[in-house]
Structures are given as structure tokens and as C-alpha cells.
Amino acid sequence: MSTKFASGKRAIAECDRCGFRYKLKQLRQLVIKTKNVNLLVCPSCWEPDQPQLQLGMYPVNDPQALRNPRPDTTYLQAGYTGLQIGSGSGPLGSGDASGGSRVVQWGWAPVGGSRANDVGLTPNNLALAVTLGTVTVVTT
Image (cartoon, rainbow, N blue to C red; front, side, top):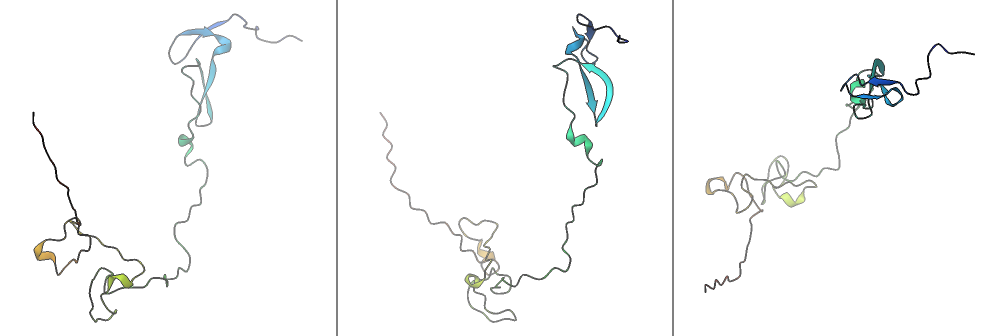
């Protein structure tokens, strides 16, 4: 049985992308977004179909919210915001920061303490204590 096309053992063709000549058997078809775009390209110009171009082609169900959420009951609140240090009375209890289960210490300048006018506003236990040794410089 005969075929409609020649075998093409020695056929030469040009890459549709770069224009260099290659054997016809070396060229590959280019596929973009799962569609054959009818381009024959050389091995150096060929690239696999990019999966990111297929976004939106398949339905994705990725819910972000929970149905009937419940509050976290494992949280023990310390003071009004969980940041106060010292004792005090208020609607939420004492201001002892060590009593909470999620105590967060923060500040604008945590190393060295807060500024003099911020002492009452943002207590800071993150003060840095440093001890330096002696440095001797010998010149010759």
C-alpha cells in the first residue's frame, strides 16, 4: 500500500521560529495552551506547553471561609490587650502579660527599651543587656 507523502529521509526544512535549517525529522510541533499552532521548531526553540497558560480552563473549587465557625476557647487573655505588664484591675482581669497563652511583645525600638515619653504606653521587656570585653590596639 502506498502513502501520499515521500519518506523524507533527507528532507531539509527551516525552523519557523529562528529560521535555521534542520532535517525535517528533527523539527517538532509547537503546542500552546493545549492547541497545536502548526509551527515546526528546532530542538533549541522548542518548549513544552506552559501550564500557567492553562489557568481558567479547568474549574477550581477552593473555598476560603468556614461554615459555622466557633471562637477559639484555648486563648487565655492577659490584661486588656495581652501586652500590659504589672497588676491592675479592669473588665478583663489583671494586666499580667505572662498569664496569657499568646503573649506578644512588640515595640518600635525593641532593643534598648522605649522612649521616655512612651514608658506608660508601651511597656517593653525586650531591653538588651550587653557586656563588652577589653579591646587593645597595638600600633607598630
